[in-house]
Length: 227
Image 1 (cartoon, rainbow, N blue to C red):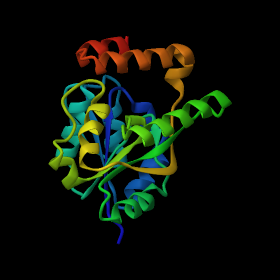
Image 2: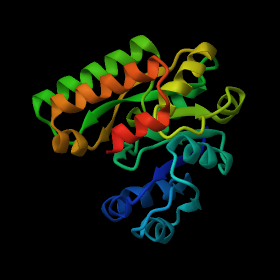
Image 3: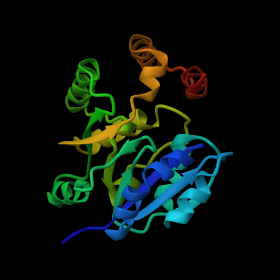
Image 4: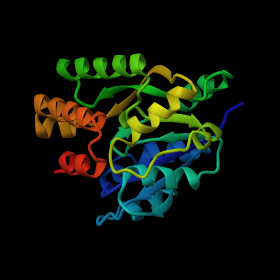
């Protein structure tokens, strides 16, 4: 039996995504899945572009954790997939998610991540990210978390925080059960890494994680991350 997916995409000025990925979005919708675009107040035409393709659109404040949770509340189907706008799900993902969640003990999981830039350094970074998340059970947003709807709400869903919402939620979820680590790849944009420089980005990520671990406010961390 093929479960239909509710794919939730938080956006803020991502109209380019919907222009670039038009065929991809249409293919997912043709498979019968729903795409819920939760817009945090874009000033480009993200919402227009998404609505034109047949996505369900909701406007909220800009806070990723909040946007994701609003999307989950608006979803119809029993399987939720949280997708970043700069990440591509393979079209075979629906089968992989269904197969993984058919196993009774499993209720959530993630994909391996690979970058749009195929240089060796990016392959190494992706390898470490994937390895780390399997070992720690912590899933980051770019790895595309999928989860049974019931588990999502039983575990309290995403918290209304602007950053680290993925780590915070993973910590609660892994007390429930470890994530399924699919070896199939989602492709995420290496744009941020290329613009900021690889070493700088790695240092920034680690600094933010450590600060978060030691109790820094997520508002402060979001300012550092998006500045």
